[in-house]
Picture (cartoon, rainbow, N blue to C red):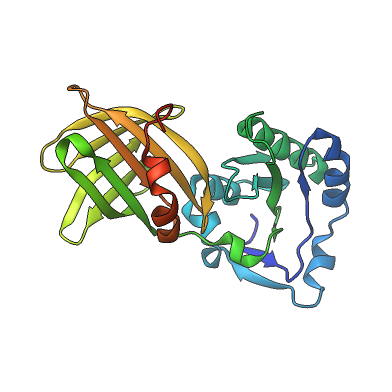
Length: 253
């Protein structure tokens, strides 16, 4: 069983692609990695995985840690605007190049053609972190903006992950729970308001990562046609600067 720790480097290798034409270079970079050589580099050291919260606090990261090498985890690049994560593993005895190819191909496919300017980068490969350590951060509590004009709601909230692996986000203010966001298949979502039990169904638009946390825009309606708009995971300065545009209903902004 592999150790519950990762090699962290001051200057990690860049294993990334903007498109399929760059895949051979990424594969060569992966295949040239030698774990014994990496740990001997200046500034390299072992770090416990619990000090790399993107790997322990996200579903993709936990799946990566549970896999046996060869294994590769790729993420959209730049992460702020390219919301994709993909994992590839094994089979045992396969080369690093094969898992890197599959992880990057899957990541690019999840971005889709609409994400102009996006690429994908391998952030962890076997027992090495291949991005700077600060890029393995993960924010536990993040800002959220909830707006339901017909109900007189316009709130700044804190969003936190639900318990365990539940696909939900809990929204609260200083007085307690305000709402619950539950992710369904694909981009489907349900938002339930605390107290009233009012239920909104709709969709989400992933935007990118902020401190390892996926930022997304949510649009939903209830049975009476009331519209709910929700921004989750953005930095407070972003909410101040872009909230008006992001809160506009798609197609009407």
